Image (tube, rainbow over all chains, first blue to last red; front, side, top):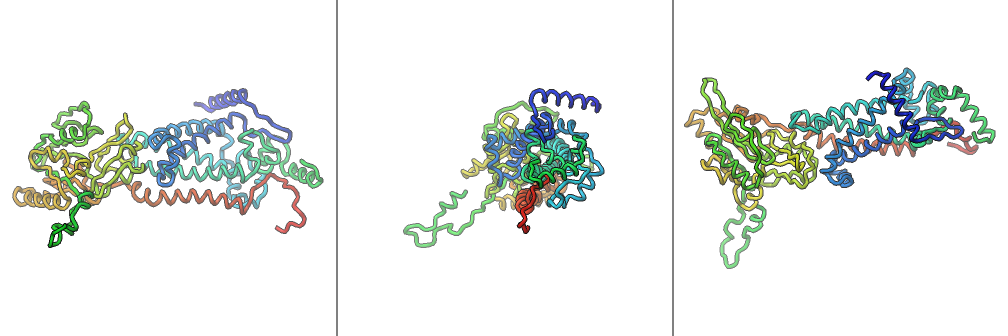
Length: 250
Length: 298
């Protein structure tokens, strides 16, 4: 599929879903995620957790055996897990097409990563000025999931078909790689959920309503703010600070 | 077995001397001995197995040998493997080996199985599958060095030889043993069978010229509760892929018992780490924040 065809597909999907749903943007807000982004994100999230819970019941039964009854027992968990996984990979691959361009690594991202300690500790209150639509942390997680999905597909196919088809050593090795991939992704999801809810307040609405406040945008994604509004993020922030000091609500 | 031990007499009324047999230790571990040198390939054991275990009939595949089918199946647990082996001097050996679960002391299937109670190893050495607990993941197939567990796609469960645990539990010998007409199959305690097997191997070496005759009881899986007497114990592969050094994949040994729980715990600690990051460092909020209070010392 040529990149033109992918763009065409994405444009069509965006238009269709924008028509089916809506995104309300109030004054002082910016559009962050259109309906298509959100539908894909929550489809991925749904199947990720279904696959995670069915998988964890098999991964550590002595600790997570209580997961399997939710899905109708061990047998059904085992049957459903690969289908959940396939659905997860399917929706994520649509998201890859959708977000391929903004997820590409930029020189500013390397600087962001070097600065990660100060950003994570909250020492840096505002993200570096070159932080675009996605920051480097988001990009790392995105590409980790891409790599993880490739591992899932290969090892998952081997585990699904079994030792009868691929031999016992292939299955035994795949089983370990499948586990490791899941554990890395689980760690990433912990951080992802934390950052988007309690860690950086004002983020969650981007994925449910689709809009974020301008203050959120110039704080966490200054370069994107500049690109969308044409205003300088630092100046905008200072202006808001002055207004706030003057007793006005920005 | 346990019942018999419990029913051993300890005190007897009106009996002057200590009760007979008190303190006697019954050898708990059972073993099936297969003497490949006296097997005639009659397949009576195959029939007895299918009969006793009430295994449904299925069509076989003819592959130009005497073998009933190429491999055991979920409904065919006991298969005589026929192999024609050419010796270096040009002579042909027609080898017959009864293929079934080996009931390892260190079972790879059990190590691989993630389902609680799906695979049980009894104190008498029998490794048994409980299909009601099996989730059909087939990890046991990759854990087994003898290629024994068989998946039934209709029930999504895995099946194999039970060493007739139902018969053995009632003090009977397995069905295959009962059917064997030549006495090449024997059943008893592990020690007794090992002794008989070694005697037979010595006889083969001393009197019949099989210099490499020996007993197959691979220690790499802790020994097995089915042992073979082979004409040539140095090359078990010739008896239809009997592995010389059967092993359990590392992913079911140190990965599963050490790294899996350790890494799983790390993942959970990561969750705790995030919680404490929040309560110590707090959130990063959109700027500008409201002006701080004057008396704020922090």
